[in-house]
Amino acid sequence: MASSWDGPGPKRKLEDMHRYSCYLYGLVTIFFALGIFATGGQSIPHIALFILTATLSFAHFKLSAAVEQDKTWSRSASMALAFPLLLGFPIGTYMGVTILINAVRYEP
Image (cartoon, rainbow, N blue to C red; front, side, top):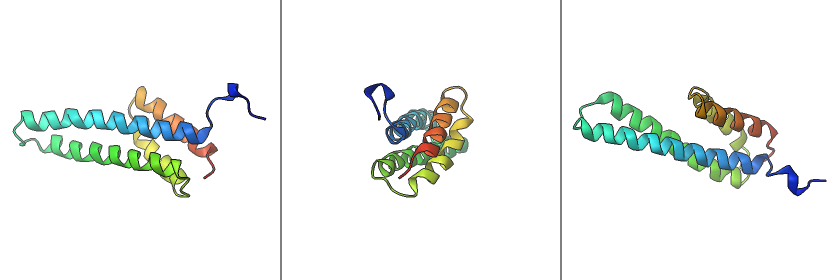
């Protein structure tokens, strides 16, 4: 029997962590956009990283909705999107490990 002390289940934690990852990647995307404007659009690395982080932000946003709707593919997609986060020590690593743990526990 679950009590109020147990806290939210893995589904809620997984949704929240994907939403927080969306916000984190969105913030980084804004910084890369500022870098593009500061260089007059001439910096290819800024443009490439802007596209990468914007794509990851959108993917986490859509995945949080998929987890909320109990899509069957959301578990494996969560595990796949957690791996790039593991490289971002310490915040990204915490978020990636939390996503991996809750994706393993989550049953859509």
